[in-house]
Image (tube, rainbow, N blue to C red; front, side, top):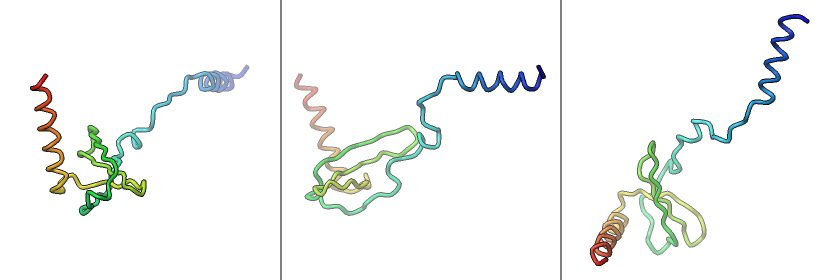
Length: 98
């Protein structure tokens, strides 16, 4: 048997039985969920807030509106900053009480 043919068959055998990985490509892992943010969004439109912090992305705030649409909110909005301060204060207060 020809050496080149044997090498090709061996390479194909290894590729066929090599375990596949479920990991996402780096380009997909490093993408941030929020690429653009909304700067003015009344609190009355929001049903739920989610906060995402990933190593390669800035702090991200996702708001689910009453229409079930999701938008990224600028975390620098004044009412959101106050909301976060109040939430942190409430958490600290509850820890002291325990």
